[in-house]
Amino acid sequence: MKKVLKQVLGIDVAQKELVVTLGRTLEDFTIELYAHKVFKNSDSGIRSLLEWVKKHTNNAINIRYVMEATGVYHQKIAYHLAENDYEVSIVLPNKISNYMRTLETKTITDKTCSEAIAQFGLERKLDNWQRPKAVYRNLQQLTRERDQIVAERSIVKNQLHAESSEAYPYQKSIERLQDRIFFLNKQEKEIKQDIKEIVRENKDLEHEVRIMSSIPGVGELTAIIVLAETNGFELIRSKKQLTSYAGLDVKEKQSGTSVKGKPKISKKGNRSLRKAMYLPALSAVKWDERFKAIYARIVHRNGIKMKGLVAVQRKLLEMMYILFKNKNTYDAHYLEKENSVQIQDQHAITG
Image 1: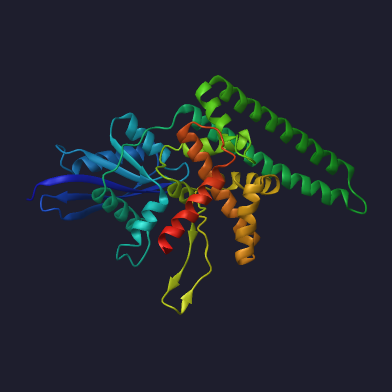
Image 2: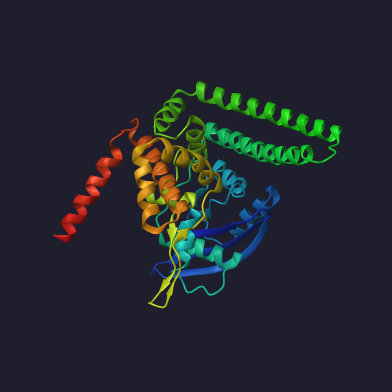
């Protein structure tokens, strides 16, 4: 049998299942995907998975476990593997979806996804996953809990408005709705206090939040959400990767001259991150002339206000990433400098 150079287990993670594919690179650099199975996404299922992998692999060669970052469902197996010193790589979902487009995959199933992940792991040199810092993990739980409370309170307020507008409103129903709003307000206040204490106790985090919230329109809560949802930008290597992770990247369908779809954002990224940038973009467009100019230029070009707002969201998120990496506060002339460089580049290209 040919010598094995590399072994990878591709894992397609769902809420209840782990669909896996074993692959290996041989000494002639051919790739084999040779074993498939489905396990429960539970402690017992993970133990069974590891026993199965041990039986079907060369124990003298390390195995890399590769999976997508899928909400929270990948965390159980990722933490278990990392805590037991297995080689783990977690890849942004858009990387796998883009990679799958290069393959001859006709049908997208859990099995074909796990095959693509395994093949991706065999073809790429991937970094070892580092477990999120406890502070980012806790902040993510708190900010998502707050988001759920705000959404629930909005529903209750609408119900209260409807009840109050009745010709003969039932007073006890109104009182119960008011009590629920009071309770939700109290919970939100407690969550904000928990967040504030976590930030205050971590001086590095406090500094990161301060420099990111120096951008017009970006408040401390937005900076905290961005840090929590990206684990301090741990998986992010570029601005383009960040906007793709948030689902703010632009997708365009075009085939020859006959088929051309309207460009639109992918929305395939982190929903919480994308949602966090909406209100800051509105604020930046309203109060900052530089962002207002970006918005006006996009809207003037295509007449769609949402496109202009998405462009500002994307720019804000990119700037937060740059400030985090450079450890600098916001430069009010940054956008002017960037636009100047772009104009110079265009002149150089056109001669």
